[in-house]
Image (cartoon, rainbow, N blue to C red; front, side):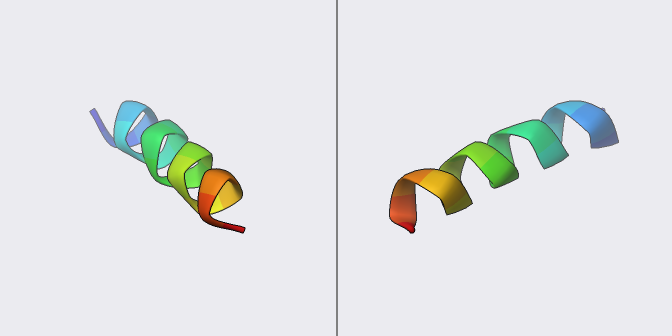
Length: 17
């Protein structure tokens, strides 16, 4: 659960950057 959320969060962060 946490790993999946972290992956999505990181992906969003990269897309926003």
